[in-house]
Structure formats: structure tokens, C-alpha cells
Image 1 (cartoon, one colour):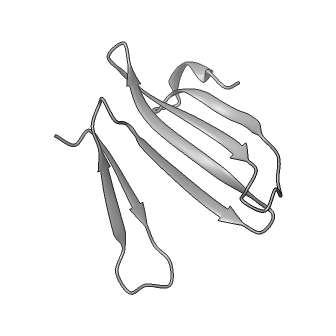
Image 2 (cartoon, helix red, strand yellow):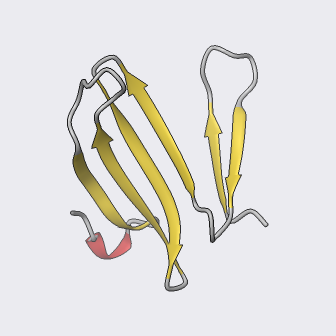
Length: 80
């Protein structure tokens, strides 16, 4: 059963969607030639959480840096 839901819009006329369960979570990567951003939504201890990171892209551009790892609601100010 879906717990997480993602959408992707780009050049195509339709928006792509993906679903993730509490067990699988969902990972999204948006990239350019200069680097990428990765978003992981996951469940831990009954709470929905998200990890947002800058990551290197396939050509080696960009850097690896954690931006946020905390509650998906943003409550409690758990910024990294």
C-alpha cells in the first residue's frame, strides 16, 4: 500500500508519478550538469521523515552535503 507519493514534471505532456511504502520509502533525484539534489522519504519509529542532500552527479560535478534530515513536516526544526 502506498504511504509516500512522488510526482515528476518535465518536457513530457503528462506528469509521472511514483509510490513508496513504509518499507521501501521513496527516493527522488533532480540533476543538472553541475550537480544534483536527492530527496529520500522514509518512515522510522512511526514517524514520516525526509533526508535532503546535495550529491555528485554522474559526471562528478557537485558535492556531497546533507541539507536536512528530520520530520517531513519540518516541525521541531531538526535541520542538520
